[in-house]
Length: 255
Image 1: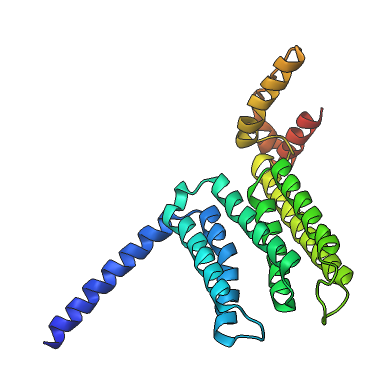
Image 2: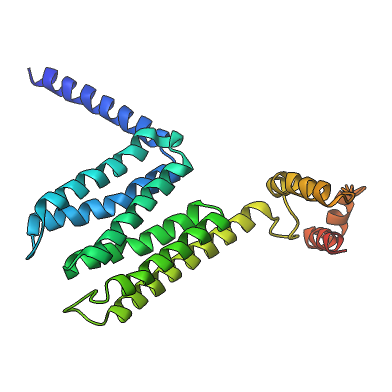
């Protein structure tokens, strides 16, 4: 009986492990982070319901909890098929939710929760979206948050100055945004540029080539491609060492 129970437990454990491996393989960094962003607000709402605070509207909080839980599960279900526009729809919904509470709420707890999503959205759009899309989104978000000082001048009553609250929120949001953009630029450069010669590597050429062709056609100018082949390059390494070969490559690229 014990051996049979052990066998069943082992079999179920293996099945669960196999399902977990399939789930992990189905995900991408984009789908996982797209789930983590709304998950933060799910945790915030769940804590609000469990602990409570004066003036809490449990029905509204429960509704927001269900909506953001759906936004958390959807990227995990779609996995590698989760589209970029889906992430934008979710963060746009988060922005709308934030605007509602910043403008119409008269409770400081809800206003703070609305400001908490700003750095998350900034990191998200800065990391996963092209510069034009990311900057447009973040500028609109800054205008939106700044506008709440006009529509809701009593923002943060009982906590502090509305200008200081919004100012800190915008500074933190910009810091997170530009930090993520800087890391993305650095990683892109490392992936596309040869570290020794600073020349475009195979991946860099594959990405830059079509763009260069489009620009040349648009400008009506010729486009040239030069291929350099070193004869007996092995002799340079054999006679002068690999440092001499490296130096020859760097000088040839900079020439």
